[in-house]
Length: 229
Image (cartoon, rainbow, N blue to C red; front, side, top):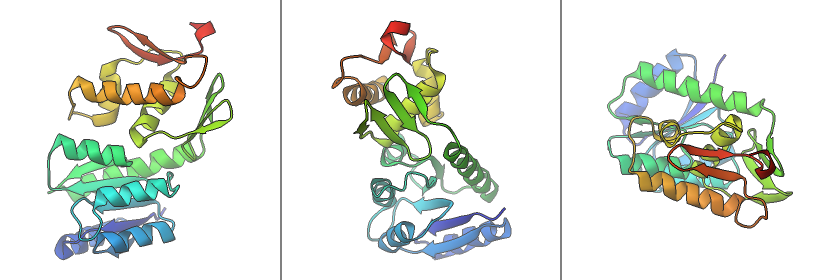
């Protein structure tokens, strides 16, 4: 099966060699050499995935990612490319809505493997049934979250955490498992996850009478109706 991808990379030689390899693997590739052109193509067309360099003329890869998510294209997998092997960059990319991160220089085989993995994951989510706990509902196809019929706005990282907790419910999820799922081997300090959990609780629990997020000190967190605890 052929997948259509948009490659936004301002380094001409790298864009050419990467695109040629992807085309050899059966992908249909569109190209953009700057951030503004890449953003326009991403919003105007339907792709199976976006490959975004971070450092771009015009708007950068983080801004493209953020704009694509804000415009409602939550179903497009996004892979970020960067030469900066810094945890802060990775966290910023995930917070903007990226699905995966690849550090330059990279092997083309790894790029293909990661690309296919995030495409398969997203296509699986399009076919997945809504996740429902009490009056809280998350639609994996649209990544929309509602509680008591009210549409809630979460950050991409908050959505990722909520989806994992709802899929595991009523089981407890340890902090270590959440951190591995979000950031792989590049773990941040504990305050980063704590901040995301605080913001998640503020959106899905604080405005409502029933508190669904339950913390078990020293063990982890789960999402469950109170009367089922």
